[in-house]
Image 1 (tube, helix red, strand yellow):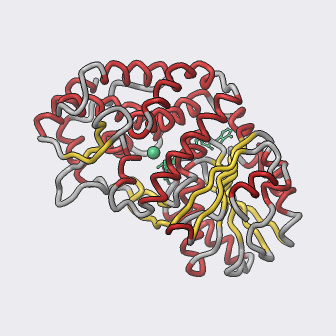
Image 2: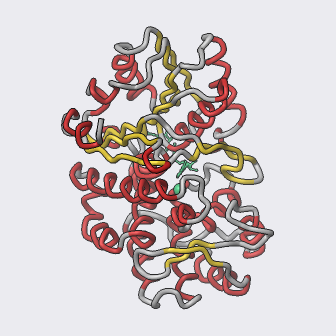
Length: 373
Ligand code: NAD
Ligand code: MG
């Protein structure tokens, strides 16, 4: 079936196809209101005797029963495992809870895993799916804005190590992504803002017109206007699909999606996981990376105040924690993009275009001195 035909069979939902290996592999991202209770969302997945829903203590009371009701139409057995909630639990112990449940229920190599939750659940479920019996299918059901615009799409899965974020993982693509915009109604305002950081990210790196659109529509997004959210999620997924379609395993282009993340990961690891939200760290990290883009002469001076104002309006921190420049630099040297101990930053090279750059430590120290408490 072509993407056009698939789109016609969907009620209301928007469909963004991800095409990998020149069409050899791919899957659909469904975006819309009411998708959780819409039978067509769940049709046509690979057949299996059982499904396992992976969720957490916060999301399960809100949405688990509804997902279970839909999946029960397609799978003879639908089990669930609930993990503790939080970035600090994105670790081996939580991952093992998934394997424990899969083995206790004698799940076979066709069992389909469903990740119901935010990026933490999605990243761990995907990693578990990549490893269980050397790989079982999984479906992303993202329930945070951040997960809908970013983490559920593209097949990066991981857990954290105490010494570095997302250091253990695999590239493993989902069979489908089902982003029900209505699930965002129950998200806290702080989490909504964290998701907006990743939305904002796509503008400067890939689409100058989208950056303009976000500036105009930010209040509507903060008020959870459904049509604004639908457009933002769709546009972000289109950009991510375009990037991942060209560079699934981050040999080059895909790294631009990490704009703000080198500084951001240092903040997250330096403070201890769960202190700042990932999106908050990325928001602040984008202020720092924007400044570095200006200091290296890649962008005009106005770019920094423009980005800082937008990030602040989105309810995100624009001043970094006082970890000390040396600690920031040490943390950034273990970033996955670092090569031979040289930190490589994603910097904006003109609105809608980004690339990788090294920078002298002294310049990075000036950036940190300017934007840290
Ligand atoms: P999260 O998964 O911790 O979710 C945030 C909080 O919201 C949690 O407390 C969660 O229980 C709660 N929640 C989720 N959905 C809810 C809902 N509908 N209503 C009420 N509460 C809800 O955090 P996140 O921001 O979704 O994801 C961050 C994670 O994603 C990080 O670990 C980051 O490394 C990862 N990430 C991965 C990729 C990727 O490509 N794989 C990309 C970006 C981020
Ligand atoms: Mg991110």
